[in-house]
Length: 374
Image (cartoon, rainbow, N blue to C red):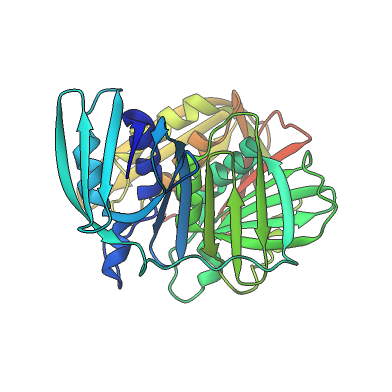
């Protein structure tokens, strides 16, 4: 059999699917893409045994149906440099040989039998179903992913938590040192549920989802989930366990509040970070008389830097230490012209949020303090 397909369309779908692949697989067949050609559609499946990414591309022409596996690295490298053009693929099921022909040449690769390729376990028929705009899911992942953990003991913290209520959905991420809570009130599902989106799945979705005005369908039960968009489907196992009560650690009445230009804060933190202690990354934040002072120093190397920013603050002078890297990440992720920093004392966490908040898209970031040496 043979089929003809756009080279660029095929390559873009293969690249998206390849993000699921692992460098070390227990089954050699998982180093391959599963190619299924049927009814004018080329379906591509990639897996690492826990996650499955399924996408498709239309065939320009097709003679017969076929199902075979191709080593991912080989086929990607074979068509990587091809300009946009029709690519003809011939598959011989007797010797499992695949030949590709294009305007300037051809290539030949060995295929494998698709029989041993494992297929995903689907969610239960009574699974919970949620629909939300792709941009809402993307924003939640973008804002929370950096705060998730890589903890081999507390696995529940290794992902983005979707806390679903009838009138809103909350995205949360924490590693115990920083926390993000994003409440979106535009999603009114009418259900009460929740699940933890694994970190690797979150990163893949961030890379492959479009920001177009489309709805994402999510179906999940107690063990697994399925996410569908217009051009891909992902099956994956959920992280089992109870997510920490993220609301319990958020201070409700920090008395000291300062408003500062977000871009200026990010730039100053980037400059100061060069001079911070390499092991701790501590930056000292001092607020007094409409001035925010950042100090980074490393006594072992005799380096020190200070930055002064204009801010809105007229309360009692206060000093608190934070991780410069985490504070910089927060400043870069937050949107808007200015941010508000709320603190209480050097032992309590600071809260950073956009100064101008959207009532339907509330975003809050929390950062635990660090001890400042006198």
